[in-house]
Image (cartoon, rainbow, N blue to C red):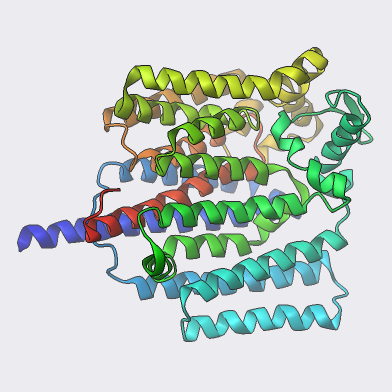
Length: 475
């Protein structure tokens, strides 16, 4: 009995450890992201910027530590407490969204908007007091978050001062449909190359052709992340048991619902292309976890044509496959992924080689280009959360990439040493994204969000792992 009790305590502690790390990461990213959106990052000051970067690094270290004691035991020790707590966070997120609209987005709210936002707040308050079935909360968050985004699209135009890089995407799509190379220099009115790999901007083509606001694509991408998490959570269940588990014990999905309501995430949807990469990341890891190796390989190839950040993810997946399926099969996966990436990238590379390399790879990754321009303009990187401002001030920014590489290689080695198991995949990738970004020469807040996506996957996977242990099902 003593051994069983200790084992149970260890599992509950490790679950709450992962749960708490995910909540802390989401809160920290939302607060700092909101400060950035409204130009309030100057309020942080050098001390708070450094302190927040240290806190993020501590969270990353916490994820690394979690890899040493994750275990398969009953995690349903206190689901009501976790559920009520996350529901309360959803209410706070929605109240913050209301204030966001009232002060910054839509000061002259119509009565219909006031009533709609108020009804959402009342529903969430009731859910805190008398918790409804989890399915209602998840769908309520989907409805409220989606409507808030769509309303904001009607107020915030896609233009360079407020649309970030989305006008660049529109220009690229217009050029493509006109038979011209998308990879060229655009006037915003400042000159700027197309800085995205093909899948990122091509994802907006259907909406653009249909004449729909291209940001609807971002909403679909965000909802795809939730669908991927649900797919992971129900990977071993059928029929009624799927519905019962998914919306009876899936606290991880409820955390995603809360994240979907966070004001900062709504702003990234309004003004950036980041949700496309997040969705590809979530789909890829969901396929890996579900054991769909060939489809996961296809997704990795698409990811390589979506964002250079696939370099953070793919080595962990490769090590997992190498450990579980051997080097010959892993080589087949790598070759297929590279072939898919080449099929998507090479046509545009041949169409306009110099402009493609300048925009897709060099613009943000060559410190002498955009990173240096922004530093010379207003010392931007000193006001963004991370350590790179310290290096820029001392003209030591050339050390940042070697530090990133060293940290990633260390995490790859740790993952392999720990057994390169599926259970440790998402926690290690979460730590890798945080540590990679905190030392990145370019420090936009939404660059940390992939770590939040993989943290959500870790929570959902851990719940699913423990549920299969209870049922005696092999994950």
